[in-house]
Image 1 (cartoon, rainbow, N blue to C red):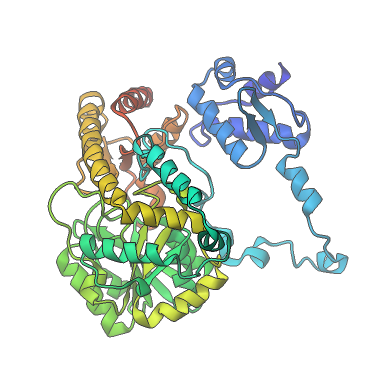
Image 2: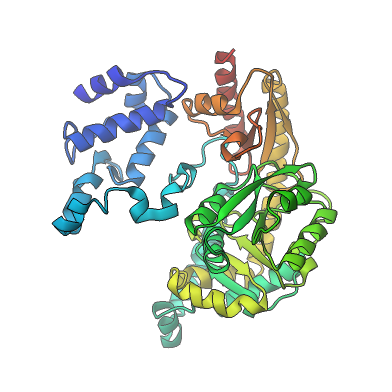
Length: 497
C-alpha cells in the first residue's frame, strides 16, 4: 500500500535517529499532511514490521507514542486507526482568537514569551514510555495484586452510604486525605525513623509536583540550587522553570560532594539529593556527608530536598538515617512516591515538611492542582491500614532481588565482552560499565532500534563525563523477558563491533 512505500523510502538506519522515531515522524507527517486520512485503518504491527524490515517492538514504540499524542486510536478487537480528529485539527479548531494587533506586534511569536523556563523541560519528561527491557525504575506490574485492589474498590462502593458518597464525590482536602496521611506518617516512622505526624504530610500528584511547588515557594529568581551531577532531570527542570539556577555538583563513591558544593555555590538557597540511592549512579550518601549537608543547611538557612524514591527496596544491610531524621524536621523536605512501590498511574506522592512550612505548602497546594483524586487516596489508605502495602513491599523486595540476580548472571554470561554490571543493594536497576570504545549514547540509540530502553547515564549529566555507563532495569521483567532482552542487546552490541 502507498503508506508502506512512503515509509520504506524514508526509513534509514542512522545513529542520530532511532527507527521507531523515523516511523513516528513519517506517520505523523502523513496524518498532518493529509496523505493518511482520518479514520484510515493501519496495518497490524506484525505486518508493518515485516514490510519495513524492523522488529515488531520498534513499530509498537512508534504506535504507542502516536496514540499517546492523539494521532492514532486503538479499537479493541478491530485494530489501530487514524484519529477522526488528529491533534493538528483539534488545536486549529480550539485555538483562541488572538487580537490582530497583538499578533502583529509579535508578542506571541517567541516560545519564551509564553512558557518562560518551562520551555526548557527536557524531552525525557514529556514522553510516555512503556516497560520494555531494560527500562529503569519501573515496578513489576505483573506481580501487582490487581484482584485485591479491585476488591477494595468494589467493597468501598458497595458500602457507599451518604456520608462516604459525599466525601468521595465532593471536594478533597488540599493537604490530602487524613487517613492516608496518618498511614504515611506511620510508614516513614517505622521504615525511615522519621518522627512526624499526619500534619506534616502533604499529598501531591507525584513527587515531581512536590519538587515543583517547593521550588516555587522557596526560591527567588537567581537563587542557586545544588543538584547532583549526573542527577534527576526533573529537579533541573523545576529549578529553571521557577527562575532558579541549578548548580551541577559531582558525586563520588560517598554520594554528593558537599565540600565541592559549598565551593561552587557558597550562597546556594537549596540542595537536592537522592541519599538512599543516588539517581542514576546508585551509591548511598555517606553518614558523614549527611551530617555535613544538614550542617550546611542550618548554617546558611538553606533547604534540602531529600528524594527517597525507592528506599523500600533494600536487599542487604540497614539503611542510613534519613536527612529529615538527622535534621529533626527543620530544614529538610522529605519526598516519597507510590509510583515505584505500587504503580505509576496512581500519580500519588507525598512530602513531609517542617512544621514551619505546613501552612505555606498547603496554601500553595490549593493553587497547584487543588487536591489529588480522592478515590485513589482512599484506596491507598485502606491498602496501607489493612497491612497489604507492607506485605506487597516485602514480596516485591524478594522478587526484585531474584530478578536482579538473574539479570546479573545472564549479562555476565552473554554480554561480558561488552559490559560489566555492578550489583545494587537498593532499587530497581543496576549500572553497567561499557567496554572501551563503546559509548552510552550510541548504545542507547542502537538498542532503541531493537525495542530496548537502555538509559545512558550521560543523558543525565551536565559537566561530568560518564558516557561509559548505562543503566539496566530489572524490576519490571520476568526471567524470560530478561533473557530475550539480553539476546537482543547482544545482537546490538555485536553489530556495533
